[in-house]
Image (tube, rainbow, N blue to C red; front, side):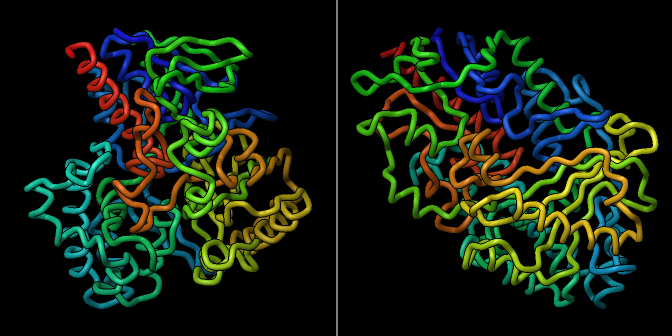
Length: 494
């Protein structure tokens, strides 16, 4: 029907490209790297295989629905394993809580911490279920171009139960008082890019996803999802152009005419940008065709960036879990250093992923594959000296907690932070997760999925609807593809 250019092969770009190809369009996907996946790329070194970005597999229903749309299943492309425990929370040496996959065990755990918490958890999760089902069925699949999209009877009937104008922090404290329960239930907002006090209670739907739907792992690593999506895209006829960096979107009379690569025009009847929204707006479009100006972008609240370390060691660490949250320091001061007065954190919390605990294929025999993450403010000055300072800080704490020597067993270490996110993904201010999900940046208040100035240009990914994270990005690509397809059909019929 139409020749469509898709920019970027992250989850949003792959999703958009595959959906449009399935609808009969000629789709060309342009990716600046030599590997698909965007932030979910992978690399190997010294016998270790490292996922570069996402490490949590939540909302399995989103992946089932995505592959199911094309008559496929996730199991056609990768093998999933549910983690149990889902993750561990470390509060200090010899002081950790394993969050069990079994709901009955979790109820008992909460009840032991706080009498009455088991019944409170039932009530809390029932509300979270309504939010999750409303969000996933009624909200996230809307392009959020107009407020009228949300004037729906079903949404109106459930509106008071969505708690859009109450913070997650307030909402959780209606049910629980124990500080450890609060920390466990508030931690998912670290992936949403805002403090619990600034995140709408709607996002307790993440707790439902965590507790009821479970934490999973695709054997071989998170990049197996990308490999599956790429294989499906090729099955549908998507034409991949790897190592193809888009220099400009050509616009004539308010319509995108193609993309410029290596000084040559690749023609297109429409464009979907799955790359960083800010980069596309400010650098790939000439000024007259930009929907937002510099001051608009500077006023946006971005999600955190991350300081990452990919580490391979030549020993195993007894008792280590796949996912570990290191909450041995207070969350408040670290959050303030991210959101209130952006600076390198004085006493950071951090997260450790050890996929080799679950999957022997990602490390040589007898070795451990470790992924360390410290959430940091976007836009910080990022130097090798600063990275090394923080590495020493967190590895010492990790060694104290585990009672194991890591430093003297390292066979591979690589860091990744703000300037890498900027260089590799053109990420605005080096953000890692996109636009923060604050109340003023929710749904139709996000940067619009459809360009206001270029009639056949759409955006998908973490800086537009529905928001940050792997499942929302995947959905974003589908929503943008459906919106563009609908427009193209109208033009044909006009």
